[in-house]
Length: 257
Image 1 (tube, rainbow, N blue to C red):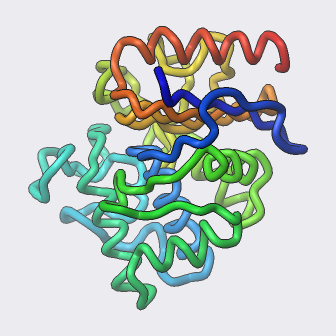
Image 2 (image 1 turned 90 degrees about the vertical axis):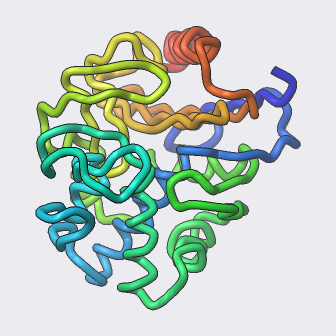
């Protein structure tokens, strides 16, 4: 793991960090957390409502954020009725980027910079899709983890809604890991709940939320323990991560939680 870099964050700041801190690489699907945050700020500014129609017939912006719109992993043709299955969808998050462009009068990459990245002093580039295109260093994930522990950009009630289960009880498959019933998700944020196995630790609380990426990136926040952790590796997500990440999370919580 030549590029591994990890950090632990608490509400009052950085607790510690280790690894190749000069490494800057793809955040992959951790990008979805930033895209969701941009959508939440737009809704907060009344650019649109989360209940506005978007995507397949009968779906809303809320459905897209919660992977409950019926859209497949890739493609624009729905494979389920909205609100009936949790289908992890890159396509749905790309649609959210298009929605921002249409409703807010700015290209999504510019809106993301102005509304989320610049206020948090995060240096990152959107090199591709809103579903997976951000790239940067560990410092950017640290700054975002700190925001998620103590939100400043999003109203507390809206943030609470985003980090609790939306459309409870939906089953589905978490790419790279397997099927869960239920596969709980918030508005952009995966909710740990009782999932086993999971990429966070066994001692992470059920309220833990976050995301991992196929490029070996991750970010989780555990409100009960008052800790967040983020990491980059540049190594494709596989079985190694399901061994290393939970053990690391459990060790961190045992020492600091």
